[in-house]
Length: 402
Ligand SMILES: CNc1nccc(N2CC[C@H](NC(=O)Nc3ccc(CN4CCOCC4)c(C(F)(F)F)c3)C2)n1
Image (cartoon, rainbow, N blue to C red; front, side):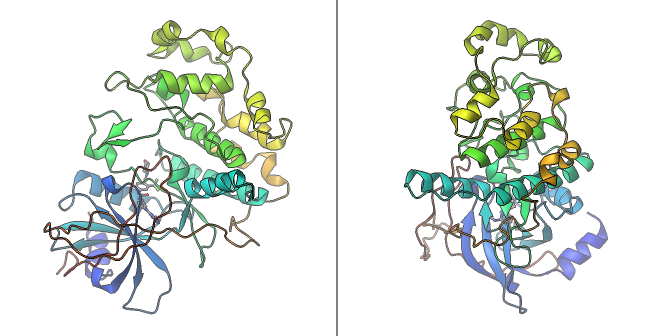
């Protein structure tokens, strides 16, 4: 860690006692708690996220996340403002701009309103602006030589009221799992089920030479879900061979929508490591009448719409034929009204409830029970197996320098 960063962050940066917790813990508690906080040392009405890293001091995971976030600076990527160490706990906290909403809870809000017979639709301009800003953020991440690998609604955050109102921020709640149990399959780590619903077919067939196209498949899955409020390739969690990238049920879920890829659709499919297993376990004729357009029509989306035409460029089985983020940003869909806006809620009230927090493990670090005030929490989305948090006060926090 270069001296400049150390000085900027630990000597002159904010200290934990400069913050008061608003008591919101969100995200997968397993990978470190995230709290909502405000500055109390200076007049500042912004909210901040403090991500507590689940490790003693600077582990590989902390360093990797910190260095990645220091390098990745873009309006549509989560912004690291600083790193704080709490001496008493030997905990490291990342200080970030707080994002009030995520696509998971937003989609759930619209889906529930539909069920409650008082449908509240997501505005077309909001959908297009969210898609455009995700593409801008992922284009930047890809141009930095990095793949995200876990794009899904739970990792797409949106800023609430304030100077960044309605701005998309790409995040990665499960980031630490990559370093906590690197040997464990990424389908289950620390008893947290990692969803496969957004995983590209080449990854499910064991491709080791995957490219940025894997993230574009996930963007397609997210776009389809913004249009229908349903995950396009959902499937139940399955037990599969340890450490195997092959997931029968997830592939079946894809083929049920897309149809089984013909040789001409995806020439290199037969080169995939799991192609033999695929041939043994699947009969192409079982999927012969399935197409993406038919699926969207069944979901009451106009099959001849520009949205479906664009979705067909993202959800392409052959990664070499899938649209890139650069090509996607230039697509005609963004040259037509409603044009994408910087505030995805532009001109609209924000209808979503703010994040709440619930009772959770109130034993403190010394195992003593503490009284924490809590309020009932919003439902956890399917993709985050996390928990909502509690009011918390850090005792005797300092930064590295003290
Ligand atoms: C609830 N509100 C809220 N507001 C703001 C932030 C925030 N959190 C919670 C934890 C999350 N942490 C991250 O998002 N970490 C993260 C770590 C690394 C990277 C870089 N990627 C590089 C490619 O591989 C995947 C990780 C990212 C990034 F860039 F994807 F956003 C985020 C950020 N929560």
